[in-house]
Image (cartoon, rainbow, N blue to C red; front, top):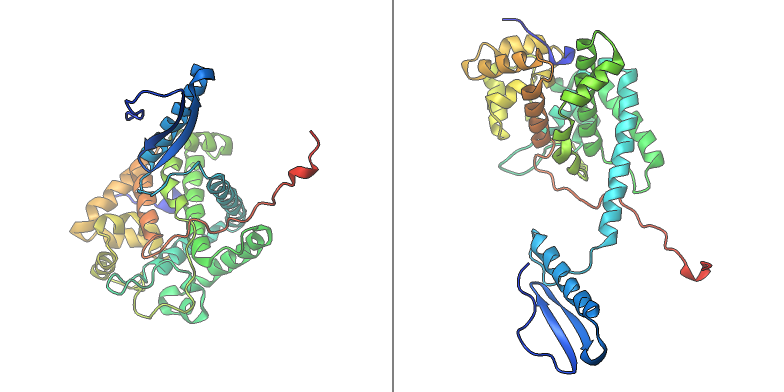
Length: 344
């Protein structure tokens, strides 16, 4: 069996009542009401339609809302601004990480393991641990299972300095940055694989990945942006030493965090520095081997679709274990415009 490494590769609204010559009508909607004062003697159809249209619009907004609310208000411009701020900030973070990883591609594997080891401290029973940035503490990064990851953490710390220097919404958390660094490392590997399949031509490789890659699968991962950092190391004994652990020990750990053999196989590149050795070990287990073989075959194809989609899906779940996401994190107040100074 050949081994191919990941690292190489409109409800009714109007009441049925007649209108008097001067009517103040309330058009009900599901979560609120619109009051429209209508003067019949001098009103045109367009004015009536405006009022009805407003009611319809509000009803539609209410119908689209996933969470019941006592009142549905006009669309909040502030929410849209926050989304744009967070999106722009995340885009800049990825650019910083891209350049950092491009300069030190040898840190791709340690960055992946760094993200994994920070996340698998999650304990379902106590709802503690998980991808909370605790691995940044010296007493945790120095543990045997984290041997060789200090260089990856150093890259994250250097990137954090640059990112914090241009952040308008406060410093980025280590927990967010470590998981985003893993995402960037995965993307860099996918892109490098596409370039190799194009004979080393970067332009063609980029086109290949744009056409056949799975970039669109990252949507949920990107929305999980706003984790809080732990203020102390996670307890010892929650992370195996992947290079020494048996397949059964690996399976037991993955079961403990809600994963199975499939996720174990697809994350083989995260389980220590030598993916080929890890996959050879995993292939000895009947529960895991079929998934190892499946992903090996997928990596040999042009698109790698099965492998990429499963890896992105698993990494997304991994990066959110036990975390409460603050969807307002990194947003900031926009200076108000003094309209009195505007010349019309």
